[in-house]
Length: 484
Image (tube, rainbow, N blue to C red; front, top):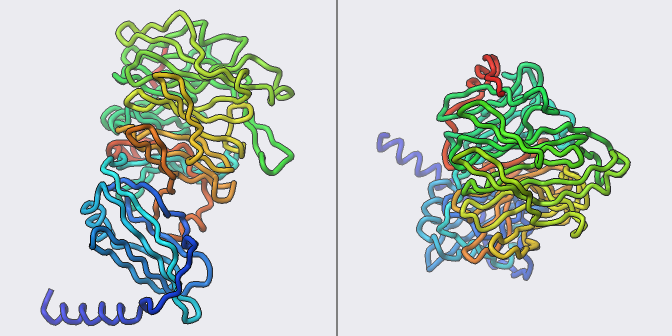
């Protein structure tokens, strides 16, 4: 760039800065700023994207000042939107990792500046896994159009489709799961005629038909063993039903469900009557990080839909030997649905093996439209349960996954409006204490106000996936590998 261009650029930047008002003699408010998303008093990873936000109400200008040990980062903006420079944001967080940043928001309205109560951002040295996958879908779930599975880098704002309706005949697509948060081992499911389970092994995609004649359906919910050789999965005959009350809207229940294991090396199915019991429903299987157990949820058979509100799932486990591929001979119950009066769904174990987090609701297996649904965390060494009161809201808090370092949890919450699910992050510190969650930041602070899709089943990954939506289309159009 020439000297002339540099001078012109400097003049333009100076002029823009001069046009943005800065606070003068602000009045002090004892209240928190009316910011959305709520990013006050949170613990954040050092590698998170900038926390861009809006100030609600009649606001003509905003100043944000972040201070730590005499170092300042200041953003002045016209209007009510605060957007950080990405490079400046990252530099500031890296410099102050492990410390608390004092943040003050000051707003201008009718010629009067108001300085709101200072809050903190505590920057922790435990990074969150840099990639997040999720399904974007209409909130009612039984109706879908333009459905897409997306991958987002949480360190910045880049996003792309990993499977898209435009390339799959607008079919329904199940959620994307990693094996041990590894981008080189994952799977998603494309439903409908010609669909199947799309297995990713180092970027090589294979379509699997994980169904044999004795199964009630193909694979629905699944999880990888630590070695990646096995998956445990459920087969479910899923029935949607509608409530008359707006707070529930939609119910989904299983008329039949069983749990199996698939050997991806030999393309064979491992069975046991303990997981294929016609007098019970078994679902939501997941391996323990050491591969020694399969955790799942089970409920005694009830007459449906009449006795749906009596359907309460327990948290159970069964032993598994990765060396031989054999299942154990007994089922252990960790949490009884009949004794607690709650139904357990979606168990996920922390990679360090210390904790298991699951969803509880009053009944059933579809807590997304249950406002009472919450997350709970069990300490696997002593069985104690944390109600996670700092994490849960008065609306639905459900689908969740761990970061590979066991310090970050992402989950889907409808806390904003009760309708649209959004991905929230919470920090689990070294003592197992959870901290106030925050929503995934977006480049445009108006994003969530304008978005008409729910973020469903968010999953954290350690790296970028080695395939895209076009690769998935090729796999879907190819021949499926049958299981036996």
